[in-house]
Length: 254
Image (cartoon, rainbow, N blue to C red; front, side, top):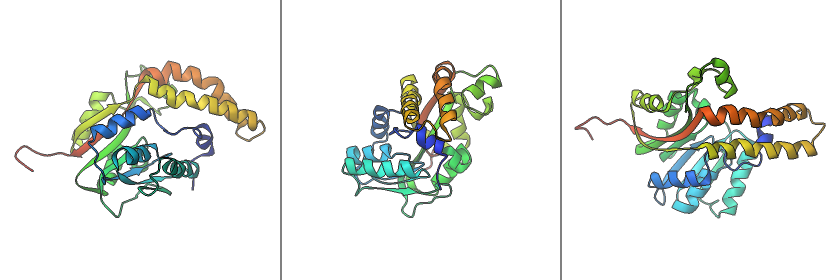
């Protein structure tokens, strides 16, 4: 079980596999008012930077699940580096359908909502691991500006314009699912650059070492086209954020 090898190669040097920066994760941890001992579940935990730094900075305990064996190994190494290996556990596996034995104070899926078949399904999955009064975190793209054509949407690596919503509509969609939006932290264009541009140096150095690999032609092609595509499309059209949700509460009810 693993993710496609292409992604293990192009993101092999990433600590964060989305447009957030360490500063944004620090802001998110502060915004959530995390306390020592809070339990955090992270589905699609990547290289573990969110859990590891929150364990260091806030004293949380947590579990992360990810399909990439490479990223999971990086997460375990990061936990050792930060001295928090006794607080966080990283599992190599399929997070689809994962339900924690111990209910979490924060249940997160930050940029991998395919795990639940989309936003609604992922929220439903996370809710099954959440304690009463806990918070769900969803990381999701949105349109900064609506593409004029489906071709532009595809150049943003979407299948169609309908894949994403503009930010006000995304926020409203959580309400329609029965949740209050209680916090949000948004990535910016610099964050997109760190996520996307960091791949280019990784690809270049990988090609030097692996010129005859079966993926060399594909990676050479991506290295040639991705800088221009990112600058013209992803950077201009796509936003990305993490949204904190709690089950909706009606006036007069507790």
